[in-house]
Image (cartoon, rainbow, N blue to C red):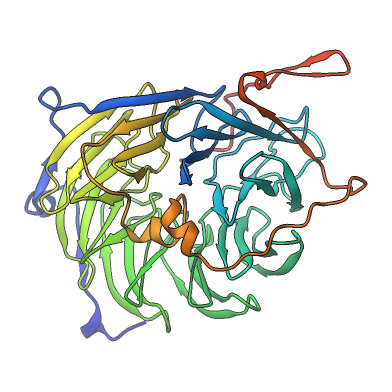
Length: 437
C-alpha cells in the first residue's frame, strides 16, 4: 500500500455527497436517436463485445456461435459453432490478430464438454485448434501478446496458451474463479479475480509480480495508462495502482459496485456502475469529474471516440455522452439490456444486445475508438490494435484424430440449420443460467 499522503479516499453515498458531483441525469423524453445502419439477428442473447478487423465484425452469441459479419452491409460471412449437439454460450469478445480469431466459450450444461479457447481462420471460420479446461464455465475474453494468449477460467486459474499450437505455456492458480479479461502490457499480465485480488503476473512464467486485495470480487478487467492500473470491485471500491509495484496511488469508494471494465482516454478514466451511473474520474487523483445516471445498471464498458463516451445500459439503451461534461448527446434504444461493450470503427458503433441482435449505429462522430481498453486489445478491439500487436505465427491445425472436440462452420445463407445423418440439428435454447451480472 502507498503512504496515506498518496491516497485519495472519496466516499460517495446516495445523499448530499453525490449531489455535488456534477451529476447528470438521463433525459426521459427529450433526446436524439442516431440512425441504425443495420442489425444482425442471432438466435439468443448477445453479451459478447464485437471486434472489428479488416471490414469484418466478429462477435459471439448465447446461441453458441461465433459470427463474422460484413462491417458495411451487415451480411453474414460465416458462423462457427463448437462441439455439435452441446449447449454452448459464447459471451466473450473474440480477439483477432494476424488472420486468426481466438475466442473462449463455455458449455455449462449436462455432458462431457469443458470450456475452452478456439483458434479459427478469420477468413473462413475453419478451426485450427481447441484448448480445453476442466470446468464448464469461461467468462474471460482472450488477450493476445507476444505469441501467447492469456485467459481466466472458473477453474481458479489464469492460463497462458501458445497461440500457434494451442498448448499450455503455464497456469497460475488463484483462490476463486477468474471472470476478468487480462490486460497485457510490457511483459506483465494484469487480471482480477473473484477472490477480490488484482494480480500482476509475469507473462513468461506466470509468477506473481504483485497482488493487491480489494474489498470484494473483481469481475471487471483492469486497464492501464501511463504506468497506472485502474480496476474496480463489486463492492464499490475503485483504485489506481502503480503498475510496477502494485502500490495504491488513490482509491475511490462509491455506493455501487463495478462489473464494467474501465477505459482511459486523455486524463480521464471512465467506468460504469451496477447502480446505473457512468463515472468520469481524474486519472491522477480519482476525483469524480462527472456522473451520469442511466436509471439501469451499467455492465457495458465505455469506449471513447471524437470527444464522446459511448456505453450501453441494462435499460436497453446505448448512450453517447460528452467527454468533458457527461451531458447526453444521444441515445439509441435496443430491444434488450446492453451488456456488450461497444467498439467504434470509422464513426460506426458496433454493439450486442440481449434482444439477440448485433447493431451497427451511425454515431455522427469521426474516427474509431481511441481509449485504452480498445487500444490494448482487451474485451473487444479494432483493426488498429490488431495490425500493431506484433508477430504471431500461423496456427497449426490439430490432426483429425485429436481427441479435442471439433465444431462446424457454415457460410452465408446456408448457415443456421445443419443436417447430421439426416437429422436436423437445432440450437438448444435456455434462460436458466449462472448469472453474468
